Length: 348
Image (cartoon, rainbow, N blue to C red; front, side):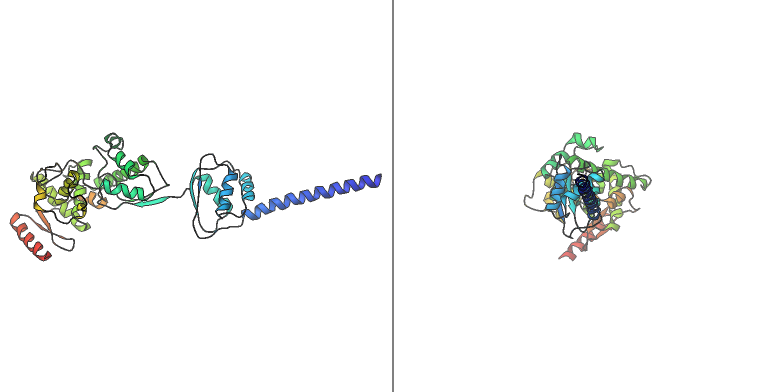
C-alpha cells in the first residue's frame, strides 16, 4: 500500500512537472515568435471592419502570410493587453515585421494612406476626377459638395463654391474618406498659403481673400514661368488701377466652358481663342466686363498667390505670348501691336 501511494505521488509529480515544463515551453515559444520578424517585400492588404475580434484579425494576417502563427499572435496580443485595441480600417504590410509591430500598427490605427497630387491651374471639374482616381470617393459627390454655397461658407469661403480654393498639393488620406474631410483640408491649405502671401504683401495692395484667389487664378493660367508671374501681376494691377478691362483669354475660356461651348474640346488647354469668342456674354469674360471676374477660374499655387499680392513695379499695360512659354510686355498699345505682329509671325 505504501509503495502504491509513493508511486502515485511520483506519477503525479512527474505529470505536474511535465505540465509545468509544457507551460514554460509554450510561453518560451511565444517569446520566440514575438522576437522573430517575418514577411516578404510584396504588399499585403487586409481590411478590419468594425466589431472584428483579435482571433479574426490573426486569422486574416495568417491567411495573408503576414504572420506564421495565428494562435501565438492572439496569445501575444493578450499578454501585451492589445487584444481589445483594434482600430478599424485598411492596413498595408510589407517587408519583415515583428508581431509586436503589427499589433502596434493595429492598435494605433496606422492604416494605409492613399496619396493624391493636385497640380496648379485646375478647375473643380478637373480636380474631382483626380480625387476619385485616388480612391477618395465619387467625383459627383465631391463636385456636389464643392458647389454647395452653405458648405463653402462653413469652410470660411465667401463665395458660392470652392472653385479656386482647393489648394494644389499632395494629400494623404485612408481609402474612402468623407468628402467634407478632404475638401476642408484642401481649403485649409489654401488659407495657410494665403496667410503666407499676405505676410509678404506689397504696400498699397488692397485685395481681400476672394479677390486675391481670383487674380492669382488668372495669373496661374496666363503663365507657367514662375519669374513672369509678378510682372503679369503688375500689368493686371495697372489695369485695375486705371479701370481698364483685364482682357485676359483664360477668363474667356472659363466663360465658354460655363456656357457649354466647345463640347469635346480641351478648351482649358487652349493657347489662343478665336476673336469671336471674346464677345461671349458672361460675367467672367474680361473683354466685356471691367475689373476682376466674380471669382477664381482655377486653383492657383503658392507662387501665383504671392505674385497677386506682390507685383513688381512696372509701367506695362499689355503682354502677349511670344514663344517658349514667355511673354513680351509693353507700356502702350503701339508697342504691344508691334509685339503681337512679331510674336505671331514667329509662330508661323
